Figure 1 (cartoon, rainbow, N blue to C red):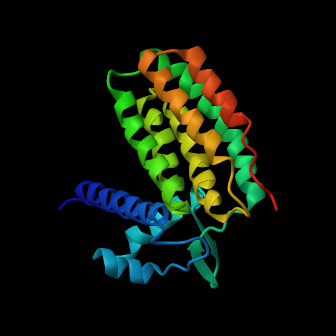
Figure 2: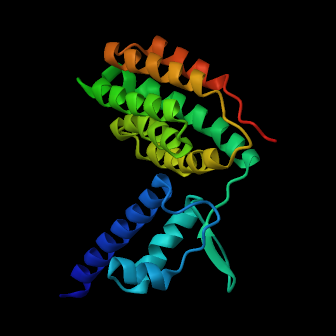
Figure 3: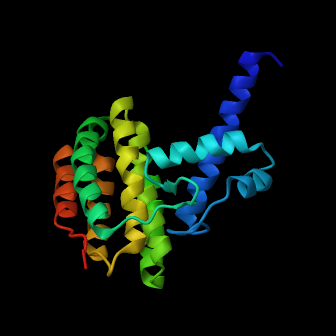
Length: 213
């Protein structure tokens, strides 16, 4: 294997490790504040420590992992204040996203949104905080994949994971009923490719307040 092939292989390993750690955080296998060992992860994934360290660095860059030199590496503990700040930024970015994506939404994409909405409602009924957060994250992330603006995609990713992680560490529920209604409106807006309706969904989302204490 030449040097270029080795770089490609290493990159693929880094992406795989990155995605698996991120999934573990979203699924609740790794919880806020839980310490992480690059050696243990390398053994778990059957890879060297180098790609694990690179994956962890990428996760640090988007705020999922935090580290203190010679002390700890752990899943970030996102405060309610940080969650509220990230949510404001996410709303602004998501407005730009719906203006771009909704008018040309692919046929059938609303079906995927409906599936995540049903999962959200099921988790809500079961009072499953982890499930609520995961379903909501997947619901609103679905439209991001349809953007043709890489800068917008990167910007959304940079804050959405903070909101997702922070939602697990709030003193009380946000208005999940309003969140569910906003999802339902957005599903119909996407189905009809109706930007005005999509804006109404976003307006409802903007009324949701992140509890700070």
